[in-house]
Length: 265
Image: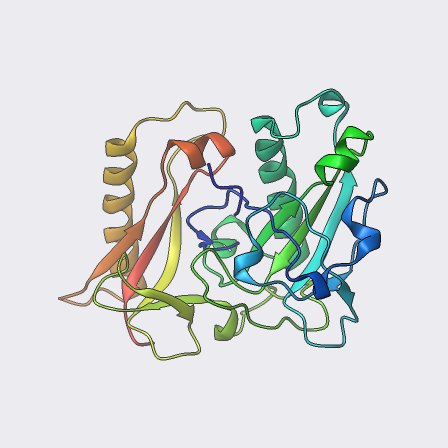
């Protein structure tokens, strides 16, 4: 199961968060490598997509006034239930999804639909395994200037707090360029594109069991068809796409599919 959410979720492959490792040795802060004490919220870093492979991260911090593509928006202790948990306990991922995604929405000033239609995403990190054995039990949530399909991340402003309030700039919204949504490259809507993520659908209640792939796909398709034609102001001909997620993402807490309109706007 992937451990990473952003946006697309666009973050589209969900919203199950994958954590990162610190880049090259030159980018690693020795004081963070096996730190038992939690890191500081508000810290900024420069991360690479290839870094997203390990559950801990010790990348050096940089001044947030300098170029950076990651900002720590939440830090806290893990619940007591994880005191004796294994380092790879699957329940950690579900806790991180629930906790970081809620704090992420609040930090950006976005609702459930908007966070799935931005090029931004988030990742969570825990202590190193060595620190875990010493009793370290904390989590760190970072907003990232890109998603699972990003080849490189974009720089963030001095702070991403409130970035989605009002009408967000197209540079932060997710579009795609290609013959179909599935086979296209996800890009900011400020770049030339052929598809735009315009809305989302909630396909199940928070406490509902997974209804199965077929039902989720059909429900997503039918809703997105109606939603996209309305967004396009009911043209006689239109094309739409949808991104839906599977049981693994459902178990982590995601209940939404994304609707795409074929448009250059």
